[in-house]
Image 1 (tube, rainbow, N blue to C red):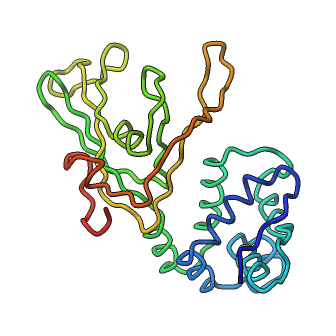
Image 2: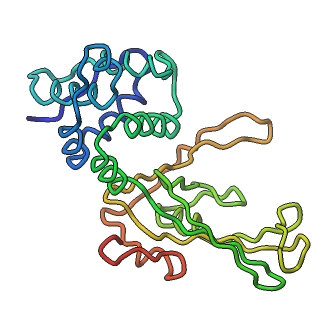
Length: 247
């Protein structure tokens, strides 16, 4: 079948776009088809993965150009996702993800979803006086890439955004950290290393910024991205430790 759209229920364009991102991912829909179907009708109405599965089947089996995601929207509303309001895409994506993971009953499906979307990062803090280093591991659902540098200059490509995001940052002045060896606050160097890339890499472009007047402005400048993104060419060895096949 061809591409099937979703009708706007009233400022639901952000939700519809996110649903399309999920449902157009073959690996995600493969996981969705193996969920445990809730036994009673009330549980089925409240179960986000099940309602997404019903919507997927409606999109694939119907002969119309678009379908209404009404049942899923009502399900999300019951989980405190407001309807008829404009949402922030990144926050809504995280909210949807948390609901899906929470309501997945099969452990193997939870693990497969993590492999599909989760990014693993190693963070480093290094004292500039004594070289004392603190390492920590963290995970991310998206790479939140800025489209402006620290001087408010526009970054010209997706590769530039990635390089700027992973570029080490000096923590000085009010941003200094307490060093256990120096026993006082000292300048630190903060850096990140990409340890593991998921099967599906989700990139968030941070296109909103605050002006001096405290008004929020959307940055709409053109940002090209390559058909194939090779992390070996974009990041240094100190910035990326993912397996060769992942890059």
